[in-house]
Amino acid sequence: MAVLYVCRGCDEVIYIFNRVGQDSFGLPTPSELRGRVSSKCPKCGRELGAPGINDVIIVKRGELRKILKKASGLL
Image (cartoon, rainbow, N blue to C red; front, side, top):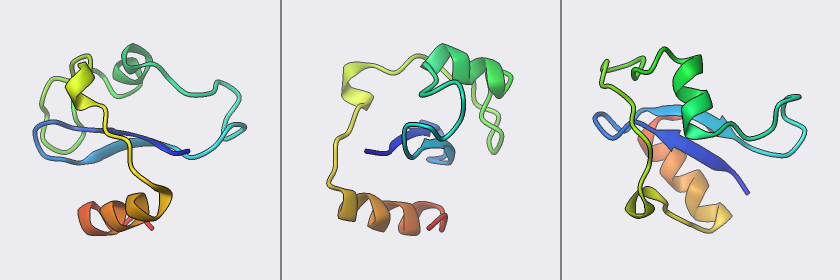
């Protein structure tokens, strides 16, 4: 299951975690990710905050590919 961190301001995909073993640290927490990107969205400069329960969206794998292609052309 992939996990995406997306900016609330511009919908830029900031980080994608595709699978276990992707790197030696595993899935970063929102606070760890903010530290990696200087607490701001690299595209629009919006301050990154902690996600709330309404910010979590679960979709089927096939739907994720469609969303990624439409939003940012990453796949």
